[in-house]
Length: 550
Image (cartoon, rainbow, N blue to C red; front, side, top):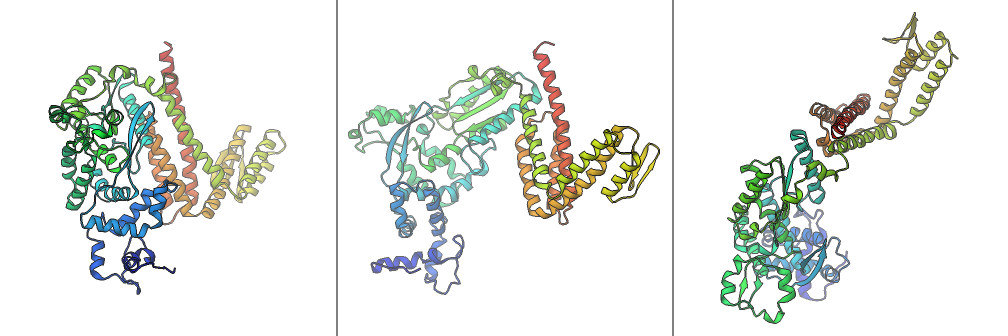
């Protein structure tokens, strides 16, 4: 690569970000490169703080521009991204950083009008670096598992799954009667006080620079309330704030900079998202730990509790509100949805059309089909179908009386390659003896002999697939099982299937993998799933009979 420099300053700057053009691994420093011109002092600068480390800023830049390459401001930043990153590093390192002016717009989302703040690209890069490298890693360990907001591996789908899982677990424990308390914090982002949010985050972030940067970001969140009189201003922290009305009704001319309210965080800012995920944690812990409620979950400012006793939920909401006041009045602005949600939870889950047991049957059937698909389409290669056809033809000839017993025994000896001995109404193939008296007995014998042949053919196909392929299929199946395991209502059956899936993964990863055993484990799992489905269908029929009054 040949780089042209327009000015001496460009060349001087290039020496500083030269590592980015030539380093072999963007996440590691290549200090042994011969033409590496950065001196020791500058090299040390790169590792002073992870937030303004050049590697961190570059990764943050890639994250910030993801799915936004089409935007003009992103393209403008990307054209000179190397000097832009270096410039950002300097501003942060020297603590000269201040957020640039942002854009504001209103969107209508699912019937709700929301004000959105659009940050400039350089500010988005800084937010990503701070959140990805400091805030998220520092705070994530203090979040409850059922906090399903936008974290790695979580999101809306995760929260839906956890809600459904809670419903199924509740059903197995208490049956079909129960209530759901739904809570929504009114104007959640608008009413987060900066001092309390900063205080709670600072308990878990030990990096002084990161806390300084967080303070700068909070300062950017402050609201110009110069239009308020002295009495309104003195009481503004205790009165619910509505940013939508503020932006639509308060003229810009009223923003004189005389008075600022340090409450509210901007929707559209990554730091606001992390703050929203973390801020209600004391309430989460109160419900989960102090009150011992297993069936509780939260997605940002929306949460639920499932319980048998409606009066308990009514009292719990009061206690939650009292607990929330310790952190700010924002949390006591909850919408009471207990009356609307107080239907049987099974109806809530299925809209009254089916029992939760139907979900169990459907999910298990999907899993069984996945297992069967593997056995049919992945493992069964080569002459597998020809072997099956030979088996079926032999069974047909036997039923139609086209073969004598001696001829049938001879055919089995030929295909199996084993010694076959017929004696009376029994036949021995190798070291296994079968009944051979009736047509049904002969069919069972033929299938048993061919099963060994088919298993051997499966093993050959799996060997061609290789161990890595077997591991991949086993792990994929394990993940699918985890997603539906909670719907299996019989605990013994659920544990049995779980053990079989784990054994399958273990076999795939074993140092000397037995491909024949691996194929057999798949077949045994399919059989076990069929049995589990039959039990769930029986329970479903009983449940339906109760509903019908039979």
